[in-house]
Length: 255
Image 1 (cartoon, helix red, strand yellow):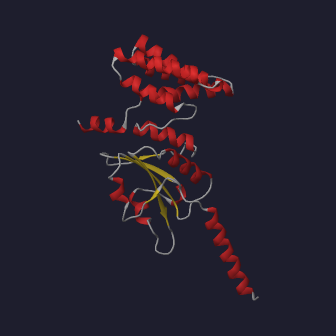
Image 2: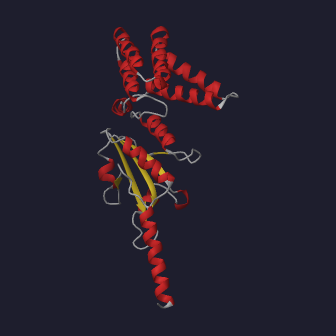
Image 3: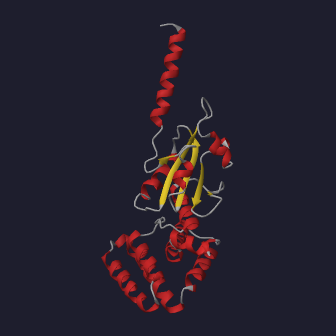
């Protein structure tokens, strides 16, 4: 085998390995310059990752993980724009349109129906599934269970906050029964939901905002790793009581 043949073989093997390391984004839709605007307009919320032509690694996997979790949410679309800086330079114009630079890949932008400009995931935040989840939930109002939360209790919390004052006790009762049925490892978390509901009944809806501020101040102090984890979980649970569905937010913005 000649030197040139060996070189070609090595290049081929390298390319093959690169493709094998690249995993498709499960739960994502691949967008191009031809389909981008058509699909974005169909959903209340579209989260888009701008990345290299064949993305791989921890950041890509984190994004894919969140996209899979969002499968049951009809109004939320997770998508990916893969940009080539060679050949026909596919999707390069899309990157330019939204000010995405190669050195910043991956860049996540969230498009909200009725809003002209997308919201960008902050550069200073660590790119992982938990932070992406918080970003989507805080900026869009779409319900995604956050780290440490219990999905079934998030659902009760949402209904509790939307219910009229005379109906809220029934949701508190559901939470109490739900806590009793939980495994011991999750009872403490379930009781946090229950306690927040009790405080809201006593002090009103303003308790959510005031408690949120109180917990944030506590987190600024010197705490053990375990205590910080506990307080961060409480912040995430409080978000389940304060969010508005995306469709509701959109209607409010239209006035």
